[in-house]
Image (cartoon, rainbow, N blue to C red; front, side, top):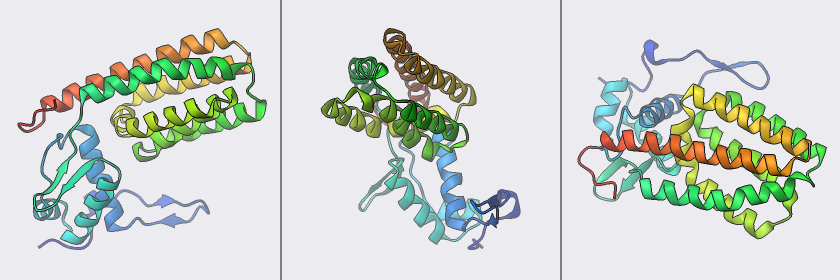
Length: 241
């Protein structure tokens, strides 16, 4: 019978809180993490139905934490909850990735070129702190931290309309970032490129910062498109177009 707890093999060690006290995560949090990991890794391909009864039995929990987990993943954009049909892993779109990154390539290198000669040391220090936080962030936090980093670098350009457009592009791209950052070598590459951007801005090297950012965005687009292609190949009879 499904239980409202997680089997010992499914339980990770309790994690320390900000006060260094061990905090045991709830069953719902563990189920969210398990399902998120399976979706991001492609173990549950795009378009797959999420059957609460089967998932509850497989994970050894009741349907309540599974239902809560599906609701959370829907809010994150990883699951589509369709009335009278059920929940499905959200489909991916090659065309959407290409368009989002094409627009980013047209706006962001210009923004960092404008910002590089004006950004303050305080803003650069905050950017470095953000990179450090990204090193240990899970996929669900990485995209938000990535935007905070880029926003902090671009804000000195004093182009609020362009920054607002770029913010929207990052929000729409966040789901795709999650697929990207489960790959450790990609995370290390992103770390190196982000620190290079900070260093070039600190040296007022606007042209070089622009060139590095162009490569950074182009590489990210290629990596994400490759992942999307692989996941779509695994999709159960769904047309991604």
